[in-house]
Length: 238
Image (cartoon, rainbow, N blue to C red; front, side):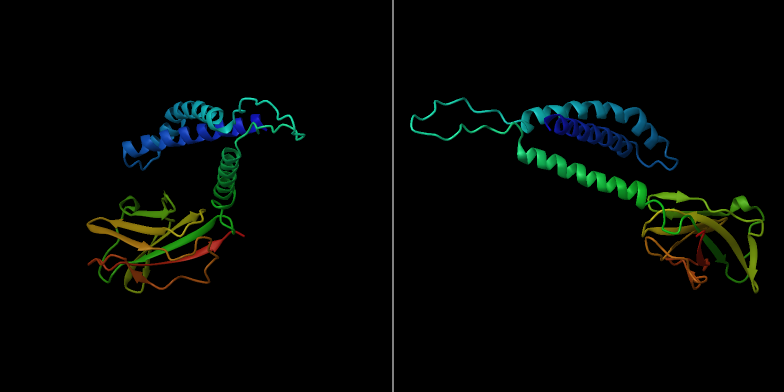
């Protein structure tokens, strides 16, 4: 048992040192859209903190996890009770280590197994933008920049071959992307030449079901003279 708790204590220290140092580097480096800084901090710099944390965890276990036996005392002449043995492990320290391991284990299971994958698998989010009357579409699809916020990441939607569409006398843009994370934070941004960036929140639960059809048209969350409207539909592969 002492070996197991010592190992867990060292493992927790290594995990804390690794993730803590990597997070500190990311915070000091500032925003990182392509993830290069975060990857380098985690795989190149993080192990240094892991080694330091491993040593610190083992030292903490030796210092606080083991109970030093008191000096032996002469037995009383009239006492028939067996001498009391001090437990070699500190119960509060052991309980704390086991509790932290259980919490981290559950969190890891939830994030790495349950949370990332939606219940319906990868879900297709179809998005349509409707421009105000008289506004024309760019000829080059590279001039259309659409970005989907999902959890803490970003997705770049695809423009199909028929991305230029119309709704009556109003021009429209068709795009789609895949959703794969359970999160309540989803939003879409649209940037066109000479038009301020428009942003809409996507009102879906964290683990959504397919929608029966497109949502109602609505303008961006921040008022803009462009008056571009957006609606979406969510479908599943199973």
